[in-house]
Length: 177
Picture 1 (tube, rainbow, N blue to C red):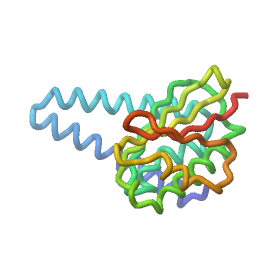
Picture 2: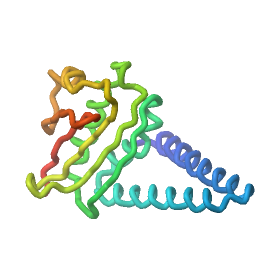
Picture 3: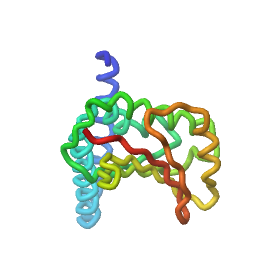
């Protein structure tokens, strides 16, 4: 990554941080302490999740996820990391490429551009692997829509797509070293 890219990422990061601080300031100036407390808890939770993301030791993946919402203007991604201090450094490039390729497959499908994605990263004992599980909620989405978009693509880790109640789950496992 060159200096210009790093500066660009810092600018985006500062912009998001300033938005949080401006909201806190506005709530404080209005005397709305409940909203200040709620926003503070939200910010603390966000940065705790970010800390856990950093602890995966996967810098390319981390940058990709941190700035996902800036790369895909019509998609929103939130993430929850349930593991600490797992070293994914040897798999970082493959995980990053898999995520990038997967979402670039979806970007041409206009039906999906306004949905909110949720990523859950946790250790799966059954598979002795880290599971990356994406969910998208909507009653009108069919799992075959996603399967067709992912067909005929080569991925480092096999991707599963299932419909569960009112959401689609797209997941893959990264073996733990």
